[in-house]
Length: 149
Ligand code: IDP
Ligand code: MG
Image 1 (cartoon, helix red, strand yellow):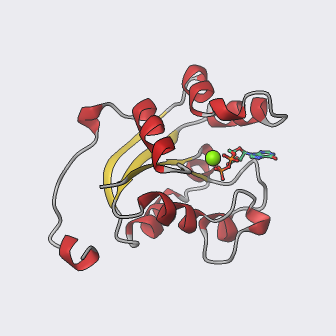
Image 2: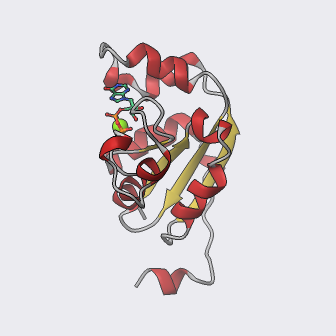
């Protein structure tokens, strides 16, 4: 079953929007299989955002993600990566539709509240950075057969 990494970035924690964002992700039917409040180190930030090294916003991005606690989450389900990305909206909140997390709660590309892996391959890599194997749980829900055929 596909898994994906979600980060509720420091702005989501500081603004008290974690519950709202988690509720939106949860009600898609995706299953929470990992979750923790944590402070991201510089080393972890550099590795997580490695694809953006050298871009003009890289320093600000690493400074921001390490500035205050985040919530790291793992969601599981069919098409988990694309379902989360759709729920998040576009990278720039100004281009995110109403109904998306970034569209409803953001105004600035550098404060867009949430991270979601952009492919199943990225998800495997990123989940390995944020979670150990024993922190990702496997469990059934009574509703599973009402969510997935
Ligand atoms: P994504 O988060 O939608 O996958 P990416 O292109 O992977 O977007 O960029 C990672 C993060 O870097 C974005 O979520 C955003 O916070 C930040 N970012 C991307 N492009 C810019 C930019 O042009 N200016 C400032 N920050 C940016
Ligand atoms: Mg990305």
